[in-house]
Image (cartoon, rainbow, N blue to C red; front, top):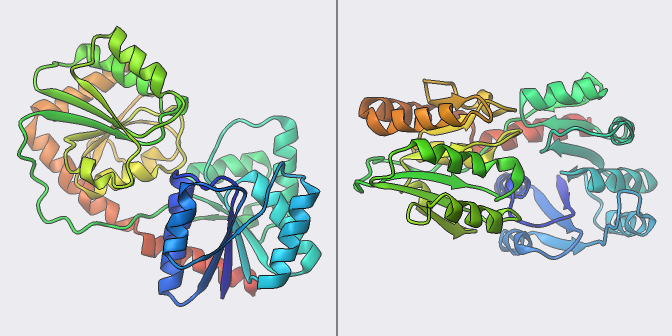
Length: 350
């Protein structure tokens, strides 16, 4: 089976990680994988290192006729069995190009759930008719798409998966209580809420690591200064190997306003790090409050601070959450994600 994955922006986010892991598992399974990107970016080299052939097509909009024409040429050349897209722009272009060539079934994965205008929702419903399957990465995403008017028979739920590390010892030697965040530093992650919560947290032997980069970083650095948190909060920037940081965390915080199915949360749990996360989107499908982590009401500063202090001060609670996090995250492996996705590919091919 020849699979072509299309991403307009080859950056280093959750969608790219899903694409990478699907390609890696597919290659291990003996499949052939190629990528089409809309531009250059750091993710391009990662897939080249997997041995994947890479193509580039400029995609100025979801309705770019030149992009459709160029995708059509590539499809005619490489003859894909499956075309897998990740976002709206690529979806529409790939559907039209595949219809024009009669080559390839198009499958799309949904990585965002966010309010749409009536026009956007209309086009979402229309282009979904050209898809063989719409993959939702959480049940809440499936519900959202159903309410948008996407037909249920098009929808399949496949949870994101990660490469599970071999963790033998999860004990940490440092006496400093380390609170960590890993991800894109954007407004949707709501990191200012964490900083506000720190007002109600004991600052002695406390360290807060923000691992990642993004448009909100400068504003957050100013906020940290304004709250006099410079000695507590450190900005580590983007890391190609966040496992180095997960090993240092005592707790992982995800105060997001909305999430579909966050990869960083799974990664933290795979290192035995208990999470304190907002009760939004697909997060409750991963974190069971009081069992393998803790949930707090989105936007509630006091509740976030209270749960951080509970993990800090109750050693038995932290150990129990850590052990349960390690156990529960096993169901979210990259191998399982690929096997379930492959079933959808094969169904599309008939």
